[in-house]
Length: 182
Image (cartoon, rainbow, N blue to C red; front, side, top):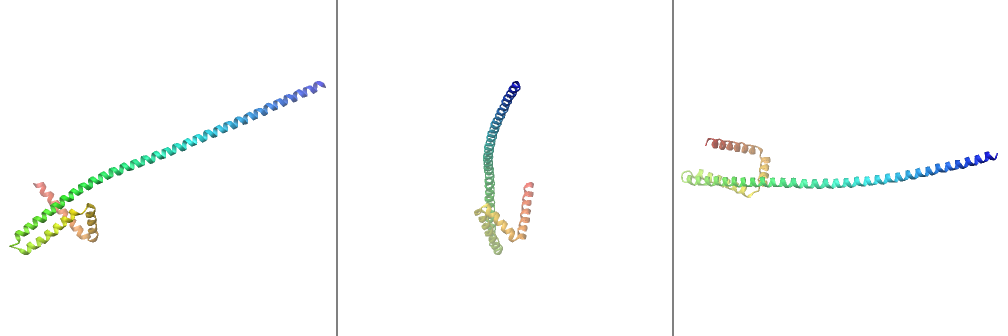
């Protein structure tokens, strides 16, 4: 029986050793799992932080690019607007000078008629004064003020505005026709 007892003790010791080995393996696996979990969490946090930083950088770069594009567009539009306004101002001045010259011509014609037809000369002088006043108004006002005045006139008296447009169209047509013949 002593042999049986020894075998059981040896088996018990070996079982105990196997249990210890299993427990150590479990502890080691748990420790490895915790380490891997911790490293994965750190890697996730680092990747998340990098992504957030990249997103913020992209947002800043986008905002800067938008602001620069907007500024460039405003600069181009401003330059174009200034060029257009300058051209319109030049044309306005030339138009006012032409109207003033027409008023002066009418006044000179009225002076020639003064002796033979004083009533007609008076009407022509009155018309010349009105045309001269119109010329001065054009000269003294900005393009915006003139456009506002035209828009106001068109709203108050649409039929008169339409009639002026028709007359102006006919005058331009005659001038173009006569310049083509010359």
